[in-house]
Amino acid sequence: MDRIVECVPNFSDGRNPEVHEALRKAVQSVPGVKLLDLDPDPSYNRVVVTFVGEPEAVVEAAFRTTKVAYDMIDMTTHKGEHPRQGAVDVVPFVPVKGVTMADCVALANEYGRRVGEELQVPVYLYEQAARTPARKNLSKIREGEYEALEEKLRDPAWAPDYGPARFVPRFGAVTTGARFFLVAYNIDLDTADVELAHDIALSLRQIGRPKLDSEGKPVLNSRGKKVMIPGKLRMVKAMGVPVEGGQRTQISMNLTNYLITPPHVAFEEAVYEAEKRGVKVTGSEIVGLVPLAPMLMAAHYHLWKTRGEDGRGLTDRELVKIAHDYLGLSDYKPFEPDKKIIEFAIEE
Figure 1 (cartoon, helix red, strand yellow):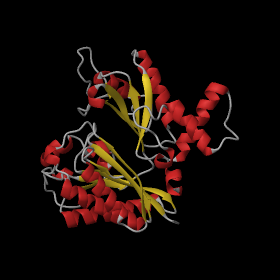
Figure 2 (cartoon, rainbow, N blue to C red):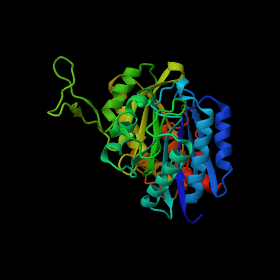
Figure 3 (spheres, rainbow, N blue to C red):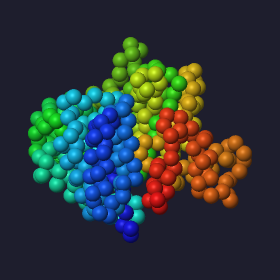
Figure 4 (cartoon, rainbow, N blue to C red):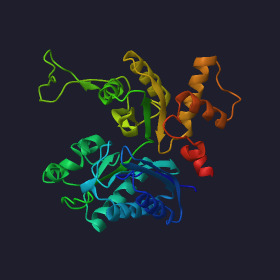
């Protein structure tokens, strides 16, 4: 393929194999598209699907999977640990080869227009496709989640970018846009204490935590907004979540630019913050796919830190094995490089 776009839609069903199989078939039914990964998580009740292909074909696959979710997922009964606003929560388009970010913005608009018109559901644009600064951040669009959507749609300020300003109970709303590679990266903790896990997340994420006064109440600025104490890591979103039925927890992270904060930096800082609280990091997890570059960065860092070596002379696969062991990437689920690393998966 001369022109490659990646699409990583997130669907609000991590527990129904029939839904997952229908999504798989929908992607595979489109010529010029390759399914790279389908990763359900029962605790989050969410499945992340990753596919690549020619731009127009990727939009078609995104629409067909959205139609599957529209027909098979009922948000009125949905419960899960991950924030969500609809049966299809978010549909990002990511430039990989021979396409620009502007091309992906156009694809997001084409997808959004079609979903809004043909399925008659609300569609929001985010990240590089956002039409206003208030909609750039996904968490801002998703504020209040599905449960607040009906009221939000009554507010003219939250009129959707495509589709009707109408609450569709079974479906909710979908957000689409264009962005740089986002690495969905979770760090595993040996504690069941979600509040403690979330406290670590607050110390790490860019937005940080609210500043409190002597009475423990949030400090407000002159505009009535909470004053925040920034966290350590830029381009990082994070929260603490329970996994394995509440027996363990994770720091669930989105690394929105791995050139600024790569996984190994987030891992090292999480280890440091956890140890301060008497908690152990047992490993970590890549959700969906990851580019090869941040894996090589992790391997080179670990070799330099532990052996004073630079890794020259090692193959990419040997370096990936070093990164895998260092980050404990099979602690929660098995990590298969040929399925999880984009460049390896495309070669298959």
